[in-house]
Length: 256
Image 1 (spheres, rainbow, N blue to C red):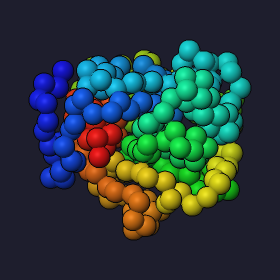
Image 2: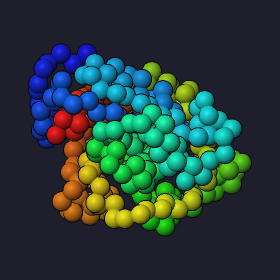
Image 3: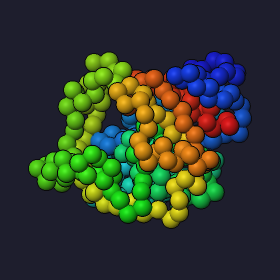
């Protein structure tokens, strides 16, 4: 539990505003990256709820308990929109991690004034007309080959994939054991944006272990005036490696 009534969250030297406990309630909608489900947020959820906010971790179609559900890119976008509308959520802080920055960024547009803030957590960002794999150095050739070899699914990553990201062996084992193959169409179908992504009120959280600099497309979006950058000195899965610290950052975002 976070006990201070008000404090500054300092991540890699950046001050992330005061954490305002007792402020107007936000609703955090949490969408983990490829192969993961709502369970990925289990260590972080109690910290957000202790501060009095609504917390809604979401499993996307075709993953974890929703395995067997056919899913393309727009299915995942609609999953997020449906979650917000079904629960009639307002003051939404939408958090998209890794792959899920792509459907989350599209959904953020579509929920309109329900959105308080969009958080891209060490994630890809959507580009209109482009799929998730287009930003890969090889244009997605390796991923497409893997999908072809695995029945249209992106297979679960081996433990070695998670080394060097500030995770313990137990945390890595937990991620690997909980992961499920990812439906390939969500990775290869194009994003559909209704307007400039830079118009969203957004924060990009960059996890600096291994790859300290934002990608070129993110760096460009950060120059537009509506986005800001926060750095965390951890690896790509901070909900496992630093759940309390990540919660502090998100509470700071909701309170600004």
